[in-house]
Length: 375
Image 1 (cartoon, rainbow, N blue to C red):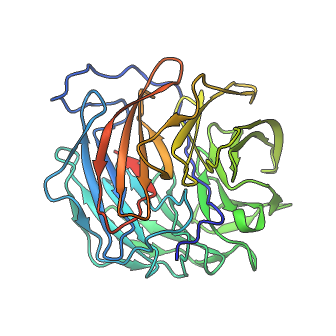
Image 2 (image 1 turned 60 degrees about the vertical axis):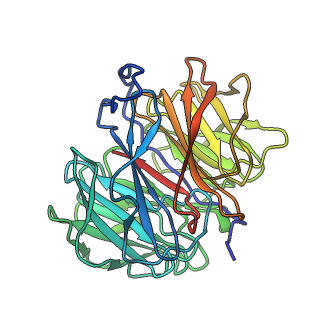
């Protein structure tokens, strides 16, 4: 039985304004700034796999030969809506996928030319119990992989070798407190602070990351934070979404404490999962099993306003967070239901933030995909 009562943090670090995209030729693979040629999805199936697509210049997708690629582990077919169970070490050309049912992490080498994935060794034990979590995060310098073990209320940290070998750092896994679920993770831009969402406890855990990868909670952590999802969209601004379509913006002070700036409520919405464009100008509210995606303008002072026409209809219920292309012109969303539909839907994002669908693409029908990453 899937545990969707609470949702985990889905998080996106933002790296400045992006350049424009390529043309609109259906047959051309797009080359976005900061990569962006390939889209990968952790299918979270019982016999787990990662689906891989090339991204055309108009945002449509073509599945790669050999996809889906077997992880060698067992997915949970469910969990927190915004559980980000896939992560990249871009310069090392490595992809990590968690297998929540057996609490392992699969490591793949990525081809920057073809997008092909090749498994490196056997899946690695996380050191805890992922349960409804299994979310992954890599620091900007690609030194460490952070793993959320929601079942054992702790965080595992692994040093990442150039060949993909994962080695637990001293003291891993690190406890975040009894009864505090490690649902979602994100790091600040320099990788010195780790934010951990604990939706079941309505808490935000903030931990300092030492140069050797060890974790220590900051003074005052955990903080009361009544949200189910969290997107870090600059070094100081956070956006949280609660079950029921409520979005709030916060300033993160020097202690890591969120200070409320603004709140926006979407009438009749059950969207629960927050992500953002890399420019930080748009927040994206999805997940929660609702047939729609809300686009929200995010001003530099934290003010929130709904994009005209939001929420925009989806083909079927959104199952996790939606991820925007690096240039902010295309959106990809995971969608699933209990009748066997498991797919990605592609949208064009216009200059005002409105969405227009460009089609759906099937995934492993035995899974329940929540997680996407772009390389």
